[in-house]
Image (cartoon, rainbow, N blue to C red; front, side, top):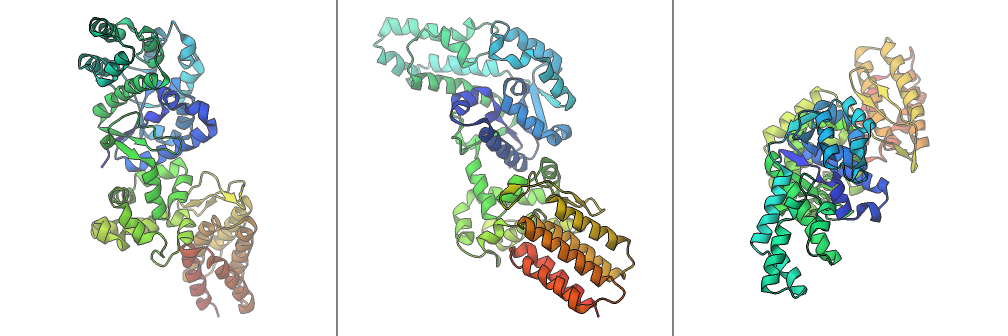
Length: 487
């Protein structure tokens, strides 16, 4: 299991090390960093760790923190600092970068500090110093005459006495920086080796970044996320301290929940993260990391519990946890999970409705206005505004009506399931289905329901439900049960 995840990719030094800001558009970087943070949040047992400085130094960090404000307010994202408060921290950084304020302008902009303070961030005090770890690593490589230094000196034909002098000069670099941050832009001018090749410079820069990251990993028993579509971003950190984003995405994909998961809003992730289902999901994912080949053979190219791959991909948010549990049960042989834990998770989910959110709904390839349907018991669904209004109005009339208790309960359940199913439908199809639900409900709750009309609406709903795979099965079952109750 993983206690904490250190979000190292938000470090401006990492972004520059891999030339991300020059190779990719800001929006693409932001999107992948957001995905990585979501996966990090779900696989961690405790917190996401961000050095307080990242917020001031990296626009990408500020963008993510703004999006993930629910995690900040809960203390699930914590900011590491060696100072007592934000104000003192900023003062120390202004002193540190005072000679070159343009290098870290965020520390000199009052608005940035003010915006962070409004989020009421949780800070954790650092007992270790990244600077000390970098110095120790630097001294060790020089004292041991690391092959990197030997190769650099050898390539320049520096012999015995010259090599000794050069190594002494290299060793003194951290001292020469005084109180300045030990970052590559500050280190390079003090190196006695002035004609570094791009590969040599990148290697030394990676060393500094690696030691900086490892100081956090050791202090907070944390891991980092690597293997992005943008690049490896591993910074030379040992593999046992890393988790592959590519591998995580594959595992979620094999369960059929990748797209649904990546679209969940942060407040929905908070709910999932603090539920018993989270333990089940996390255990399954870790097992899959170990046995992905088995999972591929079990799922890829075949039906999975009667569902095709395309149907799995269309599962709604309401079905996310159900699918995970079913997948775990069917795969118990190679996932090796405890069936009692699975059953407990299922009972907990059935006992309490799950709130459903999406960050953005796409219908027909276009982003549409967002809706929120409130079913009165903390269960909500977001999506197309016209669909929302139709289903919400129908549900409210049903709730205020005087239909018998059994019929009303089944119709209320049908409204929920149709709302969840509508997220997977193209715009006009979703609106037609909402109108069919409204007509079906009016006819079913009238004093003398006309079979011809409620059957017509009911069959239309069933036909649509049959096109979306497993997410439509509860809809079909409820419509059939309701029709049996009608004269």
